[in-house]
Image (cartoon, rainbow, N blue to C red; front, side):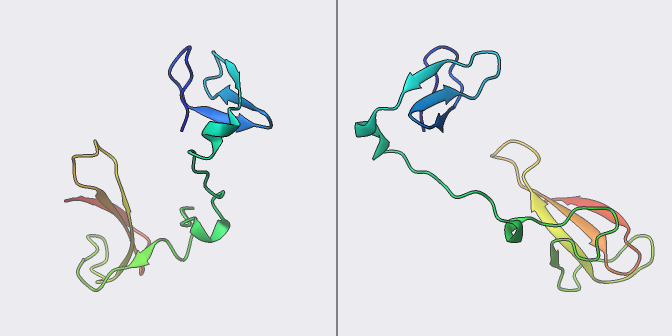
Length: 109
């Protein structure tokens, strides 16, 4: 990963240049091919990696193992996703959606 010498933002690769990702800065540097071997690039996120989050989705995340109870209808199974909503040293938040009525709630660990 390379950071901008002007503002400290992350640089992104564009052809033979490295361009600052900060829209207000737009500082550019030539790519140093010797350093390029040190950098790791990742593939773009595929559609199979995306968790459905629309309000009318039939599937959202992973199913629970009957360890939760919906406050609205009393059903014992829900879809859930886990997201880091606070600082890195805080536990993640689990978001639930009831498989029966679609009610949504969250649980803080």
